[in-house]
Image (cartoon, rainbow, N blue to C red):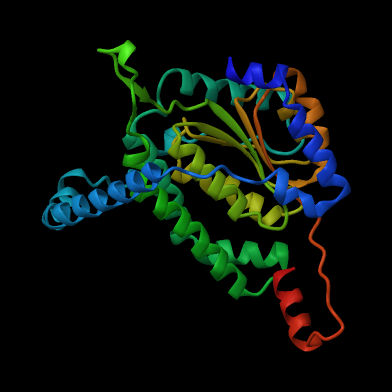
Length: 331
């Protein structure tokens, strides 16, 4: 209701301030970005909250140190590799469109049946991704070098970034799944207010060509941690990396978690005709516009990470040798 009131009754002063700011940029900070002054009580409340949080942490620290080995022994989950009969087939390039539809329907049925919601399932898929990277590091680096032609040092940095992302998710997933309590007004007592995070469903991950490993594995780990399953579409411009995912994702992940679709524009178009619960795409704004128009009628939420707009400006007084090395390394 408050959002509707704000939209239906725009502040004329704010509109006037924006116009002034557009004509004279020096006035933007005066009108548009001036924040109200907080009262003394707000600062006192923040200080007390920080103090009591610190005291609580210091009191619980010895208990956490004592219980840490016990938690690892009793509550730690080990990776359970799926059996060979649980592997899901890969939809390869040139195959019939019905195979892609059957794959998505099967994953949606697995999600609706509740296979992806448990904490143990999420942890096992994250451990499977980690094991896939660690146990096949040599083959993965060969695919990385073959597709991109980059030195092994770049693969070392990207691999560590992938593992750091998975390890961070593994360490805090049990906290992220907890309901968050919120203040309940007096007139709603004796009720309680909580925020419970529910998984969206089956998501589509379309990978790019410049970071074909990181931008497939990390979104996939995020989807698993949220309790979703996913369809992975690697970039057709990186055939060695795409073949690696097609070979090893069905080996390390169970059939309810992930499906792989190989191919180019026809296969991607077939995927976009299907209703997903979320789409993650990394690439150019030109392709993103095509995807957005294709799925506009289904109101599918999307996460678009668009590139291609990274200019470099080298000033006259710059050290050209240092600038050249930095540009080549990061580009």
